[in-house]
Length: 142
Image 1 (tube, one colour):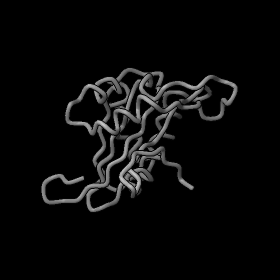
Image 2: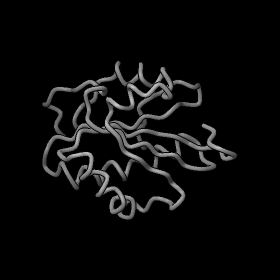
Image 3: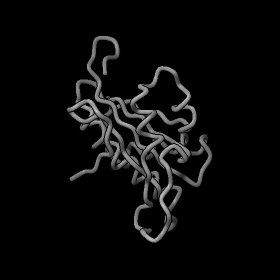
């Protein structure tokens, strides 16, 4: 994704957190330090419903969000949820990087937010980025 003169890798971490948007935003700077993210990584958080209604967002991403089910980490006997039903999305923009690299940075960010707000509770989260073929996909750190 282009932003100004730089090429940006972009990825999204969709999650349910037992917290308000203000609490998540207040915790994010500490989470970024704990996750040891690069200082040039740009991270923002908003509600998933706001991302879905944002006309500037790629319609293919919105279609993907509406179609995918997310299982809770570590709680396999719990039912899955539609990604579009999750509360928050953390967007990462990584200058001079690929989407995969932005997704890698969101792995630890997502885990740290889980520990901050959902410790010992079911945690629904999914990291999404564009694959080299141009389609959105759930990303794992394999």
